[in-house]
Image (cartoon, rainbow over all chains, first blue to last red; front, side, top):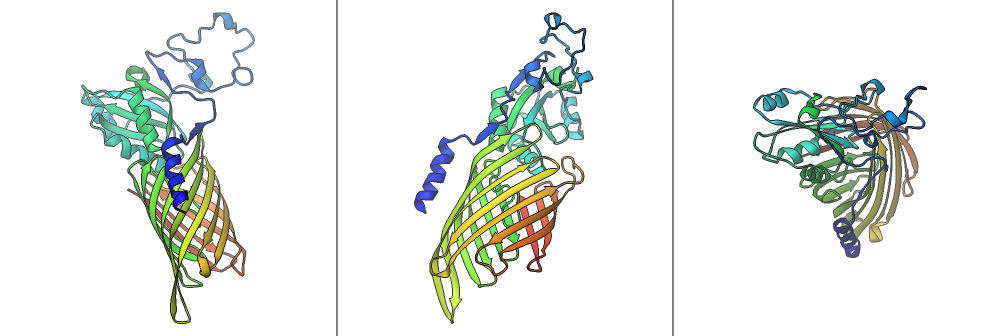
Length: 170
Length: 201
């Protein structure tokens, strides 16, 4: 049985337990850009551009590419009293799309991990939007890499990060 | 990620503690574990098997072997083990044996559907061997938002080789709010209540 315990520890230290469905990669959307590769939709089967649509002239990386009419608009920050107060104090908004968020234990885990960071002024995990909303203290920074690492410590994986005006839906 | 015999999310976030109490047709048990890493927790387990008045005390590591993520689902595969002592009074003499067990748990859930399986093999030396399988399905009639009360209707079927009534069925209700999870149910085959509680901190 000691062997079993050693195996557990060795495996835990050497193995990544995470897998996803193969469709998601962490993306950082900046400046309002929206890349179709992030949206996890099947162009052939579901993404119907209509009969007159010409793909040659369709710029998938154009700014302000609005997916709203397809029901796929990127989620924006969730406003709670804490979030609004932190934004009013000059904090920077960040919205993180999180994979596998299905229950309050997920929310508890991310709250516990992220709220330990001094950079974080406010946090809210939205189960409906499947997002983690953060407000970073004015003058502080939390990089994409750090956010990804913290999410992993909480037991989750992130799909995309939006900041500033994009996080606000502007 | 729970079943009456299983444990709710036996691996938490790094640095998190979880208190898990289970009481089913066979035993009442408590597990206090600490999550070392996102895929490994170690805990102390005490289990009282009421029918035979056997007390098991063990150290239990649990390893998250794989977690599958999707936008709307999560699935997990866990392996657990344990080693400790088993004690039982036989004819006025206290018998003590080494207790060893291994287990596997798998689950898949969305915000409104749930499926899980757990298997455990326990060796108590001269006090006997036990094998248990349990499967559960669940449905949430509404999708509760963060911090709201989440309610699930569930049905569990378990099979225990060492029991007279080997297979039993338990309908149960799960209530979930923030860091706390409570389950109450009634085993139809053995006419006994179940009560499970999990708290994370």
